[in-house]
Structures are given as structure tokens and as C-alpha cells.
Length: 138
Image 1 (cartoon, rainbow, N blue to C red):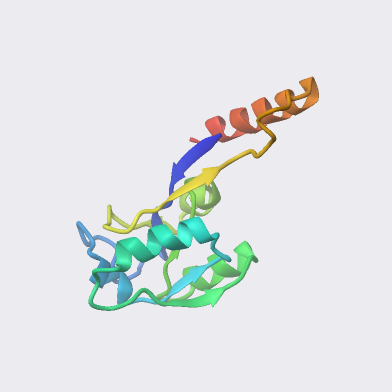
Image 2 (cartoon, one colour):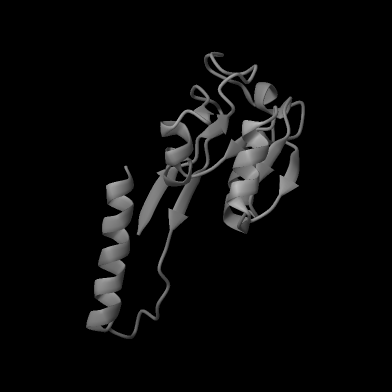
């Protein structure tokens, strides 16, 4: 239904802010604060970090996004999230997206349904509403 890049964000005064063309080694020097990561995204991140001399370290894993953002705002941890989750924090200056880096997985929103059955009008309308909402977040 929708794909969105997952930039890396930090507090505005983080040591990596302003560094151009960040390498995986640069990113791996700092711990990550992330939600529980689906297996397909774990595979993307592992593939990106597979050639790094230092492994990526997830120090905090929680599905409490407010906690993740608070920890990142108040320390040297980094987070990686879809743009729509970071947008409010970036707009009000609490977080800043790091410059383009070698690590930028893609988040995907999907709908699963049986291919042999037609979607009901209500299901089709719901999927259209969800797609419209994501399109407005860009």
C-alpha cells in the first residue's frame, strides 16, 4: 500500500549532525533506540550492516514511541523511523534527520487478504482511506 524511507534521527546537537555522507561505521559508533522490528526490516538492516567493522547496537527496544523519542532527544542515541513518525519531532526542532547515510531501510505498509476473494466495498474504502492518509503525510 505504501513505502517510506526510514531516515536516522538524533537530537539537534548530536555529534553526527552536519557530517556529510555518513558511513555505517559512523552510525555504529552510537547506540540505537528502536521499536520491535519486523523480521523483513531486520534482514534489511542486517544486510546493510553486514560489511561494517562494528555491528549496529540496539540498546533500547520498546514499542513506546514517546520513550524512544525522549531518549533520543536527551542523549547520544540514534533512532531510525518512517518519516511520518518523525515529522512532528523534526518540525518542532526536537529531533533532526541526519544527512544521507549508507543505512536507510524502507518501511512498508501492506494489506493482506485472500487473492481468491473480492474485497467488500467497506474494505476497499478503508484501504483507500489508509492510502490517502499516508499520501498526505509526505
